[in-house]
Length: 114
Image (cartoon, rainbow, N blue to C red; front, top):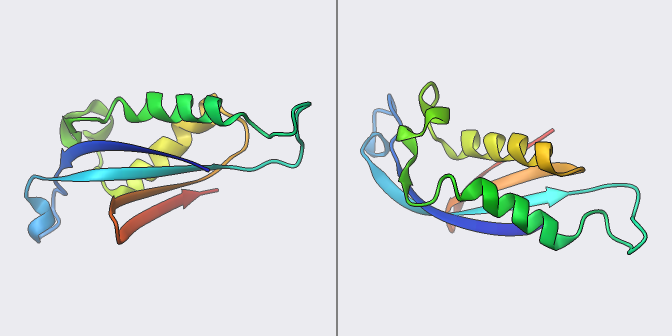
């Protein structure tokens, strides 16, 4: 598992509560991989490769209003949707992606896995 972070604003359109207002978070993202085969070094995927892939995904979110990004034009940038999007993007770059956790605060998170 590797972690990455980004800072961004969002609003949940149609929420009917305070989260419908524009607000920000310091997001934490955890990316999990698993496999049943180790390479010649004894790892599934090198941590450096995982971190590079995750950081390249999160860089697109950092210091933005998530609602303004094209990928969130038709869906709310919820923690759940961010987790799925990160999962899908990471799975294109890495073998063995198994789960993504997205924290929008220290005590609130959502996960996506297949």
